Length: 325
Ligand SMILES: *[C@@H]1O[C@H](CO)[C@@H](O)[C@H](O)[C@H]1NC(C)=O
Ligand SMILES: *[C@@H]1O[C@H](CO)[C@@H](O)[C@H](O)[C@H]1NC(C)=O
Ligand SMILES: *[C@@H]1O[C@H](CO)[C@@H](O)[C@H](O)[C@H]1NC(C)=O
Image (cartoon, rainbow, N blue to C red; front, top):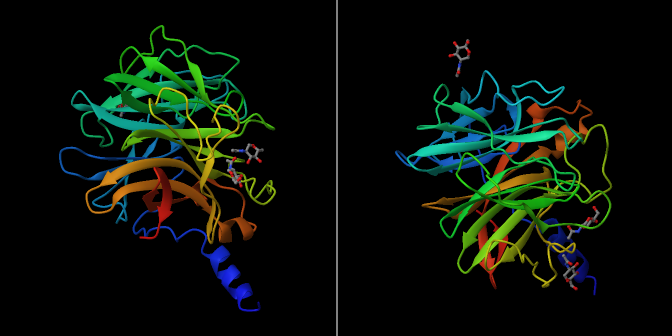
C-alpha cells in the first residue's frame, strides 16, 4: 500500500519529458520555424517589432539573432497599432521563395488583419511586403494567427482566435484569398472560446491540427487558475478540410481536443506550436513558454521573457505524444 504513494508521485512529476536543449539566443514568442531549402539552416521567426529572425544549424542551436524581416513595418493600417508591431508569423516555401504570413492586431479586439511578405533567402533585408491577403473582416472570426497548409495542390490558410476559434479558407494564390468563404474547423463552446495559434500538418493517413488553448500571456499581471493557462491540444482529420475529432472521437467543433502538452517544470503555458521534420530527430514540435521562475520572480510581464522549446513527437494509435529527447 505505502509503496504506491511514491510511485504515484513519480508518475505525476514526470507526466511530460523535459524540453530539448537550446543554446545561443533561446528567446521566442509565437514561433514559426522552417529549414532553408538551399543549405538546411533553420530559421525561426517570432512576434515582435519588425518580426525578429533567428537562425541555427540545428533545432537545438546555437541560435543567432539575425535582425528583423520587416524593419519598416507593414503597409497594413490597423487603427492604434504601430505598423512594426507584428504578430504570429507563419513561413512556408513554394515557387522558389518563402512566404511569410503575419498579423497586425489591436490586442483583445477583432480589429486585426493578416498580411504577407516574400523572400528568396529569408535573410534580413530580403523581404518584400505585399500587404493584406484580402481576407474579409467578419464578426464570426478574428483575423490572427495564420497557418498555411497545402492540401490536394491547393493553398489553405487556417487562422483565428477566441470568438469563433479556428477557421480555414482556401486561397486563390499564396498572396490573395480571393472569393472563397472561410469556415470553422475547431471551436470550444465554453467561456471565451479559448483556442488560437493553430498549426496543421500531415503525418501518415491523417492531418493533425495543433492549437493553443487557454489564457495567453500577461501571467504576472493576472494569474490564471491552475491549468487555465496556455496549453497545446491536438485534433485529427482524414481530409484536413474539417471533420477534426479528438482521441475520444468528439468533434473539435463541439469542444473536443486532446491534451498534448501542458505546464510542467519550468515550462509554464506552452503554446504557439509548430512542426519541423528534422533529418536526425524526426517529427519535432517547437513552441514557446514563459519560464515558471520568471513568472514567480515578480518581474513585470515582458515579451522578452518568453523562451523557445522543442520536443520530438512519438506516435501511438495514430496520435502524437511528447517524447523524451
Ligand atoms: C526601410 O526604409 C529606409 C528608409 O526609407 C530604406 O532605406 C530601407 O531600405 C528600408 N528597409 C527595408 C528592409 O525595406
Ligand atoms: C474548453 O474551454 C474550457 C474553458 O476554458 C476548458 O476548461 C476546457 O478544457 C476546454 N476544452 C477543450 C477540449 O479544449
Ligand atoms: C476523453 O475521455 C477521457 C476518458 O473518459 C476523459 O478523461 C477526457 O477528459 C476526454 N477528453 C476530452 C478532450 O474530452
